Image (cartoon, rainbow, N blue to C red):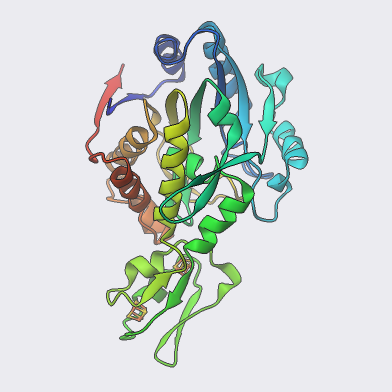
Length: 333
Ligand code: SF4
Ligand code: SF4
């Protein structure tokens, strides 16, 4: 397994690099799914259609056709059904005419049994000859940061499974609370109060991030099924294993506090870094987190803002893939 990541700071250099790299990854004549998030209406920091067009052109030069792919979201949003997501995508410049590849939004899924639950994995990327994962790397309320693992674990599953992952990570109290307040302080949505000697969860805004569970020193909060990190990473690994060929590019620019699912994704919290490329989701996410650590000078800048470790779901994916967290980063000049 290749655990080498490549850091490229310049966009033109990235396209040159991908010209030689993608020829070696995807077979000539292949149909490649470009998995991308096209941005919630009002969001400014999603990956722009003009950039994606360059990637589609590079794939064409490699002899591959492609389609731009995403799944509808589970929450209330114009992106929660394929037809209106297509309208949102078009408003953000994502049309076949602009990008040079069809835009496919689909909730078609195939059931795959995991350890914790049965996930419905998006069928289109699995049926494609390969998947190019193109991900804006930024913060996320439920997983600390959203990188390629998140782009697959939440982005390549059906709406029903997205909901099940969030609900499966929701907390319930068992026993043994010492009123230390750690769960209250570490809830990113201020969803917990201590009442009658134990935590009460006000589920008006609980994305099931499981951070209260991870924060409790007494282990007296449990997830309904498993932690968000375990469920997200399991879905990602099951899908990633089924892709025929994979390549991943993380875009480390406009690194905002929150994700592109939100109209206002908050401030940019890290200076632009560039692009991290690699042969699998784990390699690029570890390399991206390391690059953010180096650039920001902070151990986990996303956690500083979102009260939520960025590393937890990455470590969970590494365990499931039986991989270490060691990755080498080669900077291309
Ligand atoms: S920490 Fe996360 S899972 Fe726990 S109550 Fe807050 S939002 Fe919900
Ligand atoms: S973190 Fe655990 S012990 Fe501390 S207040 Fe919350 S439930 Fe109680």
